[in-house]
Image (cartoon, rainbow, N blue to C red; front, side, top):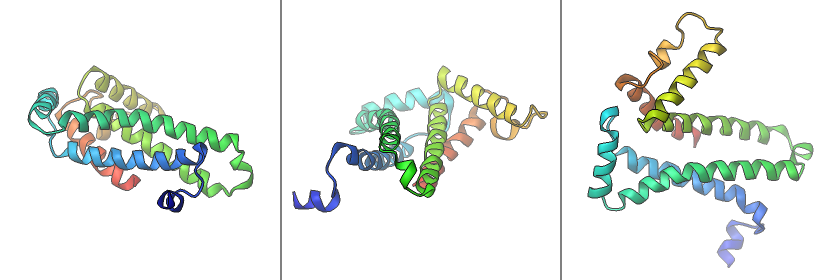
Length: 176
C-alpha cells in the first residue's frame, strides 16, 4: 500500500491511464526485443518461423500474443488518455509543451505500428504498404518516383522488408 502510494500518488482510474499506457509501451518494446531475436527478414519464411517459434521456444506463443495484443491495448489507452485530457480541459490551463510532445509521440507510435503491420508479410501488409506509398507520393505532389527510395515498387519484397524491419527495430528506441 505504501509503495503504491509512493509510485502513484493519485489512485483514481483517470490518473492510472497514463501510467498504464507507459507500462504497456515498455512491455511492447520488451516483447518486440525478444521477437526480434527470432525473425530473419525473408517474407516467404515469416509464417514458418512464427510456427517454428511457437513449437520450439518456451513462451514463444505468449510473447508473440503479448506483442500483437499490446498494439490494441496501447491504441485504446492512448485514446482514453487523450479523451481524459480533453474532458478535464487540460488544454486550457496547461502549457502547450505537453500537448506538442504527446502529439509527437502519438505520430511516432502510429508510424511504428505501420512498420509492424508491414512486417507480418501477408496481404494486409502489402496493402498497407501500397496505401502508405500512395499517400507519400500524393504528399510530394506525384513528383516522378520519389517513393522509390522508401517503397521501391510499392509492393512488399525482400529489400523492402529488410528496410522496414530495420526501421521497426530502431524507431522504438528513438520513441522511448
